[in-house]
Picture 1 (cartoon, one colour):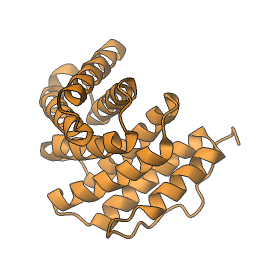
Picture 2: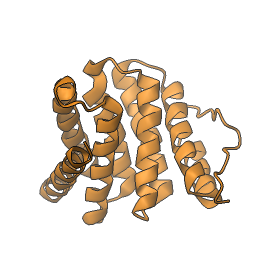
Picture 3: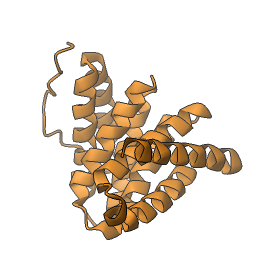
Picture 4: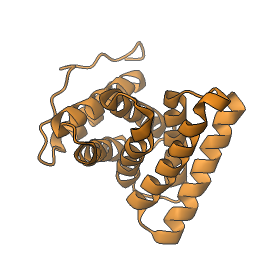
Length: 192
């Protein structure tokens, strides 16, 4: 199972790198690559024993790595990740708010792991959640809040500086949607 995920991470990373170099449009390149990969993976989920949440984690990880490799704006990449995941999982019957929160969590976790710009990534995730909410007909406020929540949970595992950076980003990027944080002060894990 581990090699299967690393294969998917590499496939998405390579796809993102090629698409960004080919078009220069980071958001659209990321959306297209992730949507296509997830739709195919979810269709095959029963056959290969991969869960939808594992597939989301793998594609988000690959997309972040690809964006970093070509020096792309992580805010644009994160927005593309969120929209791509929502489009790619639409047919899977996953709970939209859980999907948004999980996507934000793994994207922030992987952005921190590669030393990427957490503020840009968090901003992009909220923007992507709002855009995806409009496509799916769900509340933009709920989607923005779910993205902020997932991002803050991941930041809490990184440290207090990450929490403050992400909190600042998610509360200033409303784009017409009010972000309501479910955790007024996110707990920071042991490494305070």
